[in-house]
Length: 144
Image (cartoon, rainbow, N blue to C red):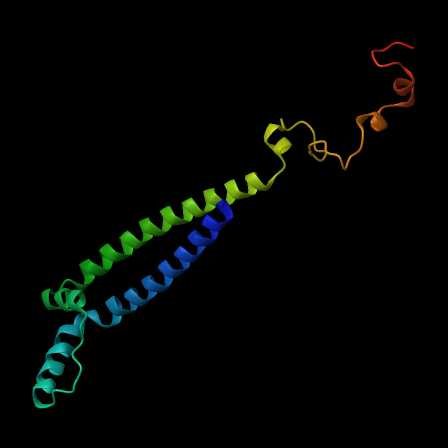
């Protein structure tokens, strides 16, 4: 389930970047002259009603009031904060997904041994096979 959330978060960041690039393009290259552009189209639509009128209301208001620089600065700062928070969440989730994927003994590891940490299972066989021969010959509780 954590892996699914990591994929969602990755897709979310990708979509966020695409939308940001498109908005940044509009703010940087279209904002200053957008109000005049719309006025020309509205004037042309009087003569020809088939001319489509642009419907970007927010960009029209920002351009009309001359707030392109302020709107762009606010948008870039807001995007940077949102992107950094989303990136941080993604990195924490990836780390958590990796930790969940480790065997349970990894969580109890104290760091003084570099050998592979695994839990005993039926695939490893009986523990007796790993004891030295002398201990195998003794009885169950140390008796001979």
